[in-house]
Image 1 (spheres, helix red, strand yellow):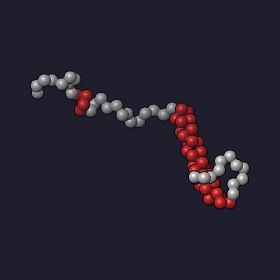
Image 2 (cartoon, helix red, strand yellow):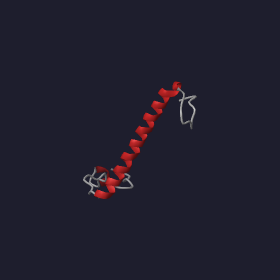
Image 3 (cartoon, rainbow, N blue to C red):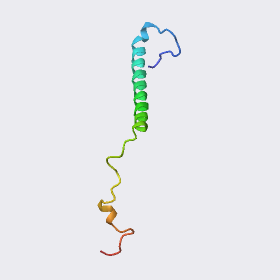
Image 4 (cartoon, rainbow, N blue to C red):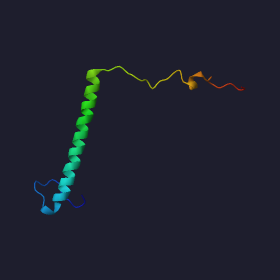
Amino acid sequence: LSGMPRRYSDYPDAYTSWNVVSSIGSTISFIGVLMLIYIIWEAFITQRLVIFSNQMPTSIEWFQKFPPAEHS
């Protein structure tokens, strides 16, 4: 978009392709923001229970002594 003027209500025909690229990028960004807002809203409204927890206290690292013993 180098050299493309900003804050103009009408662009010269030479900038039509860059204006389309800019408009498509802006639309994609706007859709992404709408999806983020919907995901956050849906998460607060449904209040689903956690199916899988990342905290696994039964995994092997929890059975190790801390600090480790000097001799095995």
